[in-house]
Amino acid sequence: MHITLCKTRQNIAQNIFMIFSLSAALCSTSSAAAGKELNTANWKKICDISEDLDTVPSVAYTKVQTAMQEALNMRRSAERTMLYALTTDDDLEIEKAALIAAYLATKAENKEKETKDQLLKSATTATAYASYSKGNVDEFLRLAASASDGTDNCLETTDNGNFAQITDGKLANYKCKLSISAQTTAATTPSTIGATGFSDQVFPTQSGNTAQSSSKSCRLLTIHQAGYSSGQVSATEMNYAGGLFKTDKCSVSNDGSRDAKHTRRRDQYSYMAQNVSANPQHTRKRPNGEHKQNNGGNRRQ
Image 1: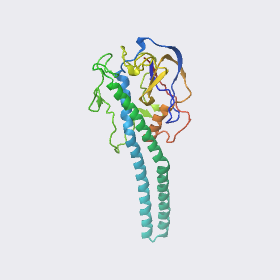
Image 2: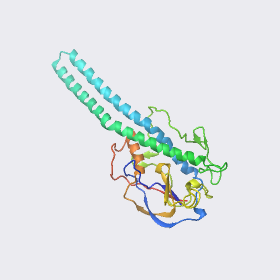
Image 3: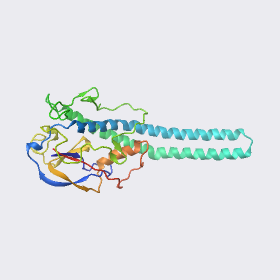
Image 4: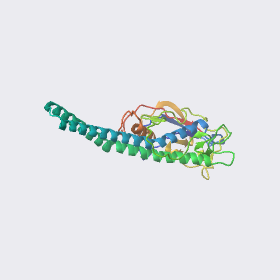
């Protein structure tokens, strides 16, 4: 079994995530290929994504608020300029003031229209994506952390060692509050996602058993044998955290080539980043546009 960045098509965004193409091999059915706990380095990255998703609504709100304030400032400047024109007897000054006031009023109108027609829509969409994704990501982390028998769960702190527990907004003392924060005006650009996708892969790009513990007994991540279902599930893969990553029932490996097609999961994140970052590369959806290629990853389990 592999744990890999999700390559399935979702129904909530357009395509944009470049990943390595996968070459199929024989399906694994031995117990050595089962799954136990996700390694600390991997689930911490999922926590980082969860924390970043929590900032999206506030950053989107700040962008809209800033744009509206800019439009208001220009409109006020236009009004003050017109007041100046009314208080002077100099015809040339009146003409200059009238031109400047008209220019500022037009700029204000354009800014208001842009905010209404574009920014509000993109900010709302980004917020919706973030809320949907955070709910899925947090649910997975809570489920994985709660799948405990008292000594183990599906999130480990050391290989076959202690398991991660949720306490006081942290997961094994790592910031991962798994809840939504009150909206603020602090415009903190997300660090884990950018206009071209994830800044760091949740799972490394080479095949192997390095994304989870060596003993492997977490049934939540096991689909090739009994445990997740009454027997081996019929599906070839299962998606987790809202499609952020998956487990693959078959043994697959990277062939080093690039897949020229995008998957919808990555675009959901890149679209959020485009519309909340301080300096986005572009601000409109690109339904089937080509983007900078990025490596995906897969993990044998």
